Amino acid sequence: MTDIHCQGCGAIIQTTEPDKAGYTPKSVDGNDTILCRRCFRLKHYNDIQDVSVTDDDFLTMISQIRDKEGLVVHLVDIIDVDGTMIGSLPRIVGNKRVILVANKMDLLPKSTNRNKLMKWLRSAAKEAGISVEGVYLISSAKGHGMTDLGEAIEEHRKGDDVYIVGTTNVGKSTFINKLIQKTTGTADVITTSYFPGTTLGFIEIPLDDDTALIDTPGIVNRQQIAHYVSDHDLKVITPKKEIKPRVYQLNNQQTLYFGGLARLDFIKGERQSFVCYFSNELAIHRTKLKNADNLLKEHRGGLLSPPDEKTLEILPAMTEQTHRLTQEKTDIVFPGLGWITVPGGSITITVHSPKSVRVSLRQSLI
Ligand code: GDP
Image (spheres, rainbow, N blue to C red):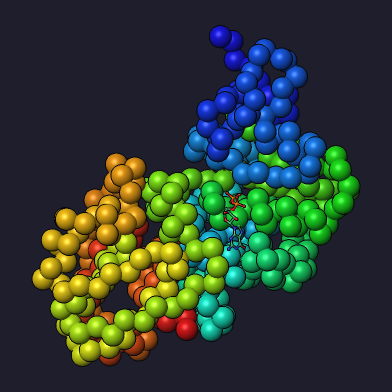
């Protein structure tokens, strides 16, 4: 069968993978004016949906804007900063100004210290090799922080184009759709620009006569736990509402399991409280350290789930790291899952997480 191309973006039409370029839910019968779902929604509803592209396509597209002036708005997911920060960003986009925008703030407890959070984000960006001009906290779903951010973008862009960049699932479509509602009401202003040699074009939303807001496709970051769990499990581990802290008083030689996806062993130290910030739907189990291995062996996928069967097929093996905490209050962060706040002092813990989802420590945000 010959390939049928979308009349909007040029992608090859396909009916099997909704998240990939060229998807249409309809059966294709050789109709030569077909639009993929993404272009259809864009044309008729001014609604933007994210699709991921291959790394090669992404690099080809980006390389065509490398030398242009512009401001990059790098969106990250506040629940998965390590998994959504694009370390290679300056190498990919060239020498552009960058502002960092942390989305999904509505999921954090109200008691979160925003100053500490912004400081941590700035240093996380620096560690990833990105020097940022500003850090902004928003909830694109709720619309929080959007007005301030809109003004900040206007100021930082200094009359240049604005590129919105993020990994898949950070909420980029939600964010851009909110921005469009604020900035334009007119249909047909949004266009796609075609890039030779790629399956997709950037979506462009005009800001004035000469410049535009440009949506780049989502980059797939292999460190995101979202890529290693089934759709069902992703729903369980992704918080839907403000996270409610769950507190465990632990003695040393006790273990906490977060489903069967992550584990914390309290090895040494005085009895103290471990405050856990995870999706309210993710079950936490406490057990004795000496029984912990057996519990996982016997109950992973059952009592200790997620993982479900599908996740078990794709989940990398667990690895462990031991930390001796000396600081005051510390957060032990499992990127994409949540974090545990410990009062600190002098304690030793061992954390277990799927390989590629690297646990990190930060000064407590609460
Ligand atoms: P994209 O893949 O980056 O375009 O992300 P989407 O806009 O499709 O959003 C990915 C998921 O995150 C969806 O389930 C959204 O409902 C959710 N989401 C997006 N923005 C927010 C937000 O501000 N708060 C919360 N709680 N969820 C959000």
